[in-house]
Image 1: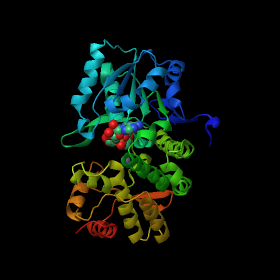
Image 2: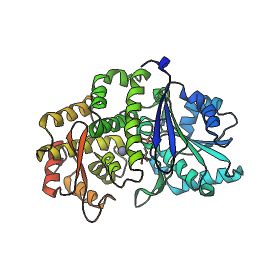
Image 3: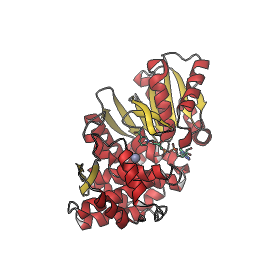
Image 4: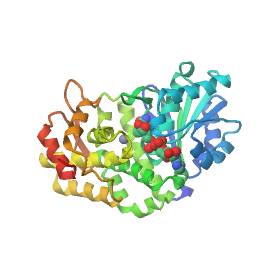
Length: 365
Ligand SMILES: NC(=O)c1ccc[n+]([C@@H]2O[C@H](COP(=O)([O-])OP(=O)(O)OC[C@H]3O[C@@H](n4cnc5c(N)ncnc54)[C@H](O)[C@@H]3O)[C@@H](O)[C@H]2O)c1
Ligand SMILES: [Zn+2]
């Protein structure tokens, strides 16, 4: 795919609002014009972090004339109501009324927090996401989940609030630290495992060009990921059924993040391990061919070494899984792969099975 092909457009047909994701080089330059065409209110606020604003703000500001920036810190520990309050304060100080559009410009933390502010300020103002991390481009910006963390746990306060548009420019990934970039790639592999052998194979095949951040290698994997997420959230906006397959790798992944207090692993890295654990569980049950489990392990390994886990023991991981909010009616749900591109959801995984899988993936006793 060359830039001459023009941007890729993907429709997200959720019942609460349909919108389009635009993906392509220099998408950033067309944000203001695209919002005008959509009839998005003309007073525009951009919520970003100081770092992202310094790196890419001037380019976005050229495309959204007279936009008013609101800068907030974006580490995971700032993803809390106090930061959302700062966004409300800025909007109130500027006398923003309902005829305002809020544009989020940053990673998933900024998108989730500012999206929540847009959902709740005056009971909801127009929202557009311009995600700047690979993880936010393939995942957080699509599907309408917005919210913040609570001291008790991640993402406990929030809402579903679909944006009016999403603009994805792969060029901004050029400044993303390598570790953040890789973290997003594990989520791309997740989509391949749940829904698309073609995407899975493309990551393996184009790995070098992807790591070189070549737009012609990035655009197709971002677009395929977005298409999969768009189809799934279009069919199941509020995660009543199908959308749960996107939790593949997240049951163990969330537990690994939680027991290390969200400090040691990037979310995507924990999902990398979580996918290996789920694949091991499936393989041991005879639900996944050895060949496919090995293909996943090889692809995950090909992205580079994940941070060590040998000092993490099974007990706390299993205990944390029981607390996971996806425990419904006392049952722990696991999304297990049955092939590359196919999954099944089970609720009868036993503790010894989990222990065995964790051990084989390399966790301590
Ligand atoms: N809403 C959803 O459906 C959904 C889905 C997945 C994840 N999330 C949420 O997303 C968050 C994680 O998002 P993330 O991985 O993007 O992390 P992040 O937002 O913390 O960003 C990671 C780091 O990258 C920096 N950064 C962002 N863009 C950059 C760029 N172009 N160049 C250089 N640096 C840049 C940021 O300043 C930050 O330090 C979590 O809070 C998670 O809960 C939400
Ligand atoms: Zn995830």
